[in-house]
Image 1: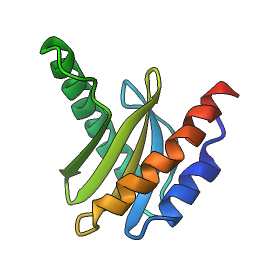
Image 2 (image 1 turned 90 degrees about the vertical axis):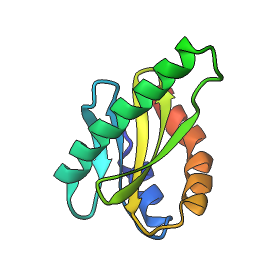
Image 3 (image 1 turned 135 degrees about the horizontal axis):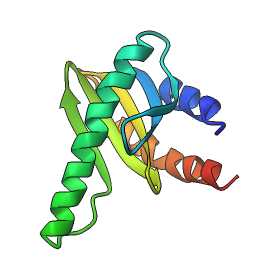
Length: 120
């Protein structure tokens, strides 16, 4: 899956972003871009995906609206995560002091492109 350019663009277009990756629902990283600390990014994001899945499961059990994207602070960083294809998630890691609003906006703009890559 050719996500490298998309991940690189996502990280470089958001001030304070430190990495991005595509993760399978079991927490396994498929592709990633992190100028520094790729292993730490992969480990952290596995936990973030677990939290996202738990939120989605709780929403379903309570008959609430479907969970769209998740923003979470964890282990000294902020994360934005969303499912881009069944069983696959796009995650963005940012520094803990980053304003997440512009990051969420840019993240949402890139979702159609990310989803299109799964159809190729």
